[in-house]
Image (cartoon, rainbow, N blue to C red):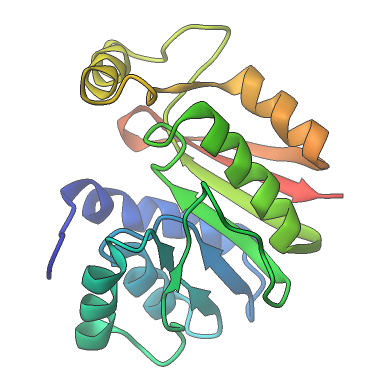
Length: 196
């Protein structure tokens, strides 16, 4: 598989366990930031009744497309080219918008754009599921997350682990309500928001 991520391999099963508690059996899921497609492949196999729409920036889509061609199933749609800097939702409304390990990679304004884009795409009562590490009350949840944040900022000063409270404010302004905050392996969280 091109572009393979060990982190995506490690976290796909725990994420699927949580998703299974919340996904409608026939959910239409938009994934923002699909990377190599490991989660798309795993979730579409785990939940055969769902339709999964992966998306990525233009530069990454060829890798994603190649992996899906080799390993994909018929409930994965062709990947969408989606760049948070310039994208408006014009497709059918979706039941779930899902993004794993995106919020701390993109800049804070693009993270806010992701939340607003989710609201554009979601049906009423639809769910936004965000997986990754967060700070609470300005504090990292572990030493390893603090080190990871420094590594992110050294690589790209605009990236970094986001404040939970700032995300809550953005979500509330966009019309989303936090319904669950799950502690996940490797000091990550799964945040689940519902669209009003």
